[in-house]
Length: 559
Image (cartoon, rainbow, N blue to C red; front, side, top):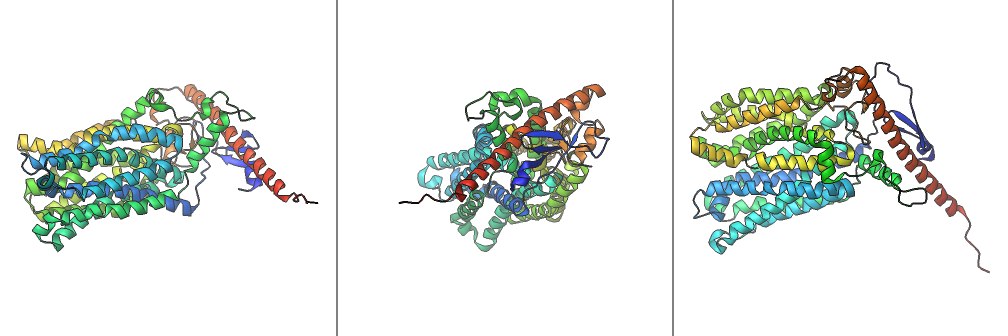
């Protein structure tokens, strides 16, 4: 950055000159409850690298979940042979990893808010891929007895712990790198990685079953997809280790450091405008409503997700009577269709807003779950149609997770808020979905139970969308919650329309003068943060000038 650029820096509605900040003259007089966002997108090459690294890490994570889900029968026969309900125990082992995901979120989330997103993400991808590889070399119950399922459970716990930081960190990283007005589009590629990981696992297992005999598949073929996690993880680690931290985090980190030291570098009292990560107690105290609302949305997302993508192969084989190969084919076709539509739906959400696409998806799944599950039960062809229909109706939720959930929290609490909330709700309702569905069908005898379970979760989600703010086009920079009164939003964006038309949840029941006062207070806090950012730029310019001046001085001569 040149000295001229440092001397005059724009920051979400303000022009910074030196260490001072003044509001720019508004171009549009109808803005009353928001301020204009000056989007500062990273270079296209940086955004592409961030997108690729985030998506590949996510694909590695869900590749493991995908191959475990489609290898259920092999895992049951090799690790739980001799146990009653071997399939149920295998699904319970799948679910048990989710018990430690909240612990992972509690550990990795605050670390990501304090140390940066990049450091945590490079670590979690190694843990995840390493544990997946080791599952592929585990001895069986016939070889080492009870030690075999114990080792399997241990590795699943390691995977769950690492996943507790992986997904929240990748989503936060991608959301903060993406331009405000295209966050839905770029964010959809993270979930593209999710489905790609599932599809890769499903496709490889299907390929193994076609290429090998049943005896070969049982002897060693099922292990090959697990072993391939090692090179995939190493590639992901290489990409992530070469990334910089997000500009949004770097900006806040620098402003926090500037606000806690005086001119001589001595500690100074914390500034509320640039305070650093709040910690667990502070997070719950300040954001418990958001965490509760997001939990309801996560319940809807993950009951549908794990019912369709992890339980469906078992359901098609055990309950519908399709062969393993036919069941995998049904799921793979649906996954490929999902991947094709995800970027399109992400782009649509940038224009229409996140809330409309969520309302559509949740309502449609509630209405269509029972008919489509009935259709799946007829035959192979109808199973493809029914599964694909449910999968495509789910896409508006899945493709916008990265754009929606991180935007519910301010920068200083974004990683931890997302990771903790997402993982707690997922551990209770997501990871257990396959086990609950299998158990309930066994108890009730009703093979349509997964449809009822999905409907109940979607109704919870519909209620929570009402309390979700519209954040499409809202800036993630600074310390304010995106999309709130006085926050920076892009011109003509869904977030700006929601604020100016008084449709955001916080505006319900407020008088106009109350909204104007809250807006003014938010603007003043943004000015204070902008001053801190400007001070960083000014100090950096002075340091660079001093270094340049020192470099130009002639070296002393020796007599």
